[in-house]
Amino acid sequence: MTGLRGLLVTGTDTAVGKTRVSSAIVATLVAQGERVGVLKPLASGADRVEGHLRWDDTERLIAALGRDVPRDRVTPITFEAPLAPPVAARLAGQPLAFDRVLEATREAIAWWAGPGGAELMIVEGVGGLLCPIAEGATLADLAVRLDYPLLIVARRGLGTLNHTLLTVEAARSRGLRVAGVILNGSEPTGDPVAEATNPIELSRWLGDVPLLVEVPHGSDPTALLGGRPDLKWKGRAAAPRIVSGDTWRPVPR
Image (cartoon, rainbow, N blue to C red):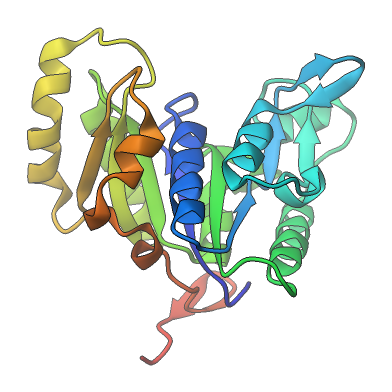
């Protein structure tokens, strides 16, 4: 879809902290002097502020960028109802075709790739990897077309072993690369034993997928993610391989 390097931030579920992590990575890369583009192709569930719809995730990504950019180049497809995009689209009387999502994503990335734009993209998904994003399509279908390495954000507490391993399995079954997993404290500690033991247990099951870092609830994610030179966010981003439909082959190196 594009020659730009990038990372696709997905989650094991909704409300796991994808925007928190994405924004911290963007702010870190900007502080390192990188030219970064931000994209959340779809969003639903807006706040109405002074008669206008406002998507908090979009605003947070732009704030991390540190400069004002057109909102429709960050989130080109938006719906007010806090539901999966195709459901929200149907309720609005606007059935959402996957081709529309692909075209909007291509146009946004092409804009970022223009003169003076970005050299790498941080793309944030909606919901989890198998969340429906259009009629007959999930985020995984868009991930295959983008072909960026996935950064998986998971909860720290009870249940994260199953959710994380299912997400990794779904990604690998589609030939997607997984750059790593981040355990994020999206809520105050409620399962202290699970939170203490999950990182070790996950590491035993993840194989060659690295468990990169834990972000405790209430911590400053930008300070944490930016203060770890070993995380090398730019190095984890990659350009797409040659993609055709649902198949891919590696670009010769």
